[in-house]
Structures are given as C-alpha cells and as structure tokens.
Image (cartoon, rainbow, N blue to C red; front, side):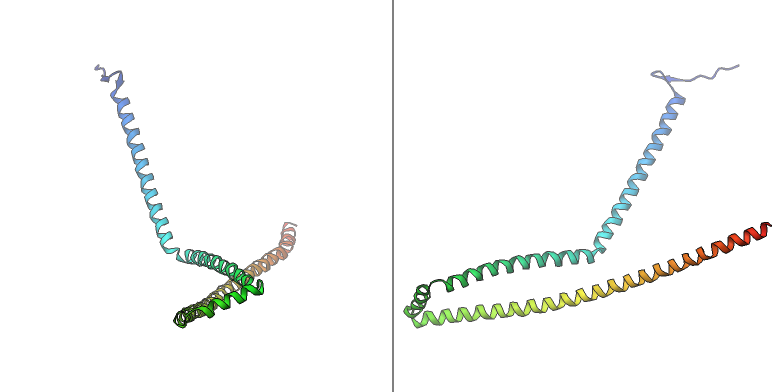
Length: 184
C-alpha cells in the first residue's frame, strides 16, 4: 500500500491551499458581479437624470420666479422711498423744481431722452412679464386639468374596486349557505 503524501508549504497542505484558492476565486467573482451591478445602476441613474427634465424644468421655473419676486420686492422698496421723498416737505419739492429750472436746455433734453428710454424699457418689461404670466397661467391650467383628470380616473378605479369588493362580500353569505346545504 502506498501512502498518499501531502506536500506542506509552511505547514499548509496542498488541499488546504486549493480550498483557499477556490474561496478567493469565489470572492473575486462576487466582487466583480457587485461592480457590474453598481455600474449598471449608475448607468440607469444617469439615464434617469438625463430624462428627468420635467422635474428640473419646474424647479428652474420656481427658482426664476423667486429671483423675480426678490427683484420686484427691491423695486417696490425703492419706489416707496422715492414716493416718500417726493411727498416729503413742500420746500423739498420746490427745490427739486428749481434744480431743473437752472439746468441748461441741452442737459434737460439729455435727461428727457434718458427718462424716455427708461420708460420704454419699463414698458417692455411690463409687457414681457404680462406675457410670461399668461404663459405660466396656461401651463398651470393645463397641469391642473391633467391632475383633475388623473384624480377622477383614480377615483373611478377606486370606486370600481369598492363595487367589486361589495359584490364579493354580498356573495360570501350565499356561498356559506350553499356550503351548509351541501354538507347536509
């Protein structure tokens, strides 16, 4: 009889080394599978991020509206200060008029052109914001109508589900009666 020899390397048999090698290969495969799954998930999330423009569109609109509200608030404060300044004491009003009386005609013409330009700019801003408000209102109405439609559909679906449940509950006593009759 021949004895089976196990070669030992530093006190470890080849069988043990083979087992450890197989275990390491399994771990490596598990890590590679995990890496593949993570890469796939990253790809899915990136695709979702790229296709999720509707949510970011509303976020952008919201942020733009906040900025606009902030600017308009600052304009309101500025205009209130100007009104208070104008409504101040009457001597102030007269002094501001006298300043214009002392100005040369050329400077007054330049000031008039500047004020007309500012007026046109403000009028165009008013038209722009009126148009933007109308567009936003239409978009809101459209979304609100869609929301109402979805709610109605969900309600209708829920109602059908409840009717179906009631029918099943109504049939339950009949089924129990039939069961009792068949057992007799």
